Structures are given as C-alpha cells and as structure tokens.
Length: 397
Ligand code: AMP
Image 1 (cartoon, rainbow, N blue to C red):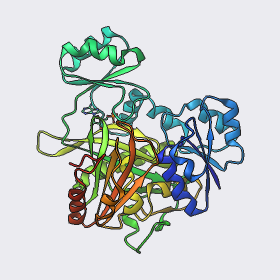
Image 2 (image 1 turned 90 degrees about the vertical axis):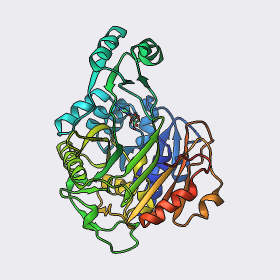
Image 3 (image 1 turned 60 degrees about the vertical axis):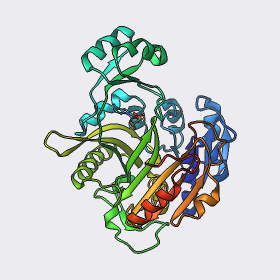
C-alpha cells in the first residue's frame, strides 16, 4: 500500500523504514527539501495549506497519517475527502490545544497539572496570584521540545513572560509540578480494535512472550519508559528493568489510554507523557502532561528493544494488519538522544549492545540529530550508558 505521511522528519523516516519491510511504500509532504524522510520514500515539497499540493499528494494513497502533531487540521480535512486518515482528526484537534487536552485527560480519569487559561496580561497577573509561584506559562498551541514556555519564578517575571510569549494570546498557566520522574505510555490500537498479539511482528527475534506486550481490545501497550528531559528536550529513556515503573501506575495509565482509544475509535500509535509525583502517604500518582497522536521520541528504543517497534505497529494498524507484540526482547533497553552535535560513529560502535541512528540533519543547537539505542540486561544497558557518557550531543543522567 502507498502510505502518505504529513511531515518528513525523522519520525516519518523511521515509520517508513519499518513499513517498507511490510511491503508498503511511502510519500511524504514537507516544506523542507532536505527532510530526513527523503531517504525512505518519495518526498513532495509543499505546504500543508496548499490545497492543490494536498490533492496531488493524495493521488494513489491507500491511507494517510502524520508524524507531526501540529499539522493543520484543515490539511487533514482536505485529504480525508479522498483518502482515509489515521489516527483520526478528533484527537489531533484535541492534542493541538493544551487546554482541551487537559479536559480530555480529566474525562478519562487522568489528573492534569493545575492550570488556568490566560489571554491577557491582566489575566496572567490574576492567574499567577491564584496559582502561586513557581508556575509555567505556555502557549496553548504549537509548542514542542520546551518551546513556547516560560518559567515564572516570582511575580517579577510576569512582564518578561508576557513579552516572550504573550503575543500568541492563547495561553495556559500551569502549576509547577514537583515531580519525582517523568514517564510515558505508548500504545497502538488496531483497526476496529481487533487482532493483537497473534504475531510477533516483522522485528521478532525470538518466540518470547507475545501476550506481555499486548492488551485487550486490540491494543498493544509498550512497557512504560522513564524519561529524562533537559531544557524541555528528551535526553534519555530507560525501559524494562531499568525504568522501575510501579505496576499500579502502569495499570492506571493503560486503563485511561484504552478508554480514550476505544472511545475515539483511534487507530495507530498514541503517546501520553506523565509526571510521577510522591503522595503524602508515600505512594506515587500520575499527573498527565501531554499527549501526541503519533509515534513518539520516548518510544525509539522499540526499534531494537521490542518484537514489533512503535513504527512497525503504527504501519500495521493504519493498513489494517494484525499488530505485533510490543513486549521487550531483552530485559532492559535505553535510548539516548543526540542533540546539537553528532558523535563519531566509532565511539558508539565500540559499545556492546549500542545502535546508532542518525537522521541526516545538519547540526544546529537544540536540534535532534539522531539517537542511540542500548539493549541487554539492566547491567549491560547501564554500563553502555556509562561508556557513552560525555560523547558529543548526549546528556546522560
Ligand atoms: P511539555 O512541552 O509540556 O512536554 O514540557 C517539556 C518539559 O518541561 C516536560 O517534559 C517537563 O520536564 C517540563 N515541564 C512542563 N510542564 C511542567 C510543569 N507543569 N511542571 C514541571 N515541569 C514541567
């Protein structure tokens, strides 16, 4: 099947690299001629707002998806007239607005951070009085990797925060969550919620425990990674034994995400990011931060770490195939992002169990250039992380 992908970034590239192994071909739409995904399919250079470009893009497609959640909903609407679009516009619209996202979290039983909508400097002053400091002012739309955010440490920061991001007028003030760690849940739902876990996926290397990576109602749940961010950018994900996820938290996250996916008849990969907070009684609770209706950076380890990666399962779901198992192949895995500067390949290759993925992007400050996956026992993964510490582009904690 010819699959159309809105966006030609690394997520699109890795989706196609998984999808071609299932016999699919890919066409990407992106305004940048040097988009990473150009190596994995046909790249149409064009704008998401150009209706003629969208019509040309749609020609011959079996299905369309996106790798970038800020793709205009208008583009998806135009394409939907002639081709099926998955995961579906309903959740895309919700995920594009931090306020409606938080309302959706509440509806499925997840607690969001305390928040107040802000649309003027006057509102902001009132909201900061109400919320207390520290708090974070965020744009409701188009924020990613910590962009469009301002940490307000004291009331003296209010004017600067407004100058920095107030011009968007659609803002949200969030209480600062004193979290213990950050985690995410990546799940993939099959079309019609059927047929999960009967196959290992194209990436399967051993018979393993298929069921462990699967859920009821046609959803493959990946084991939850623990994620470390710096300046709003993901730096390291650990999964499996090294992630130390409390089973009750994983259970609660899965139940909520299942509710959302089933309720919306969602098809494909959905990611929800959470903060883990310590409760007064010493237990732990989840605060939902944001969701992405697409494959996600905190799931990159699944390429080598799971029987079927998030990319493979997304392709399987949107083309009506059975899903593969999301279970881990090894007891542990980790992913290290390469940001701003690329390491020498030799420095990664000499680390046992390490796989280097580069996206063919020009180095630039704050830009994700690639990632490294580590798989093995928990000790092997931690020892690999220690060996990689200090190489260019990485921050390993
Ligand atoms: P976001 O774009 O909302 O995912 O934010 C990027 C990162 O900033 C998160 O992964 C956290 O590390 C941090 N962050 C965002 N919102 C909050 C908050 N309300 N409290 C504490 N840290 C936050």
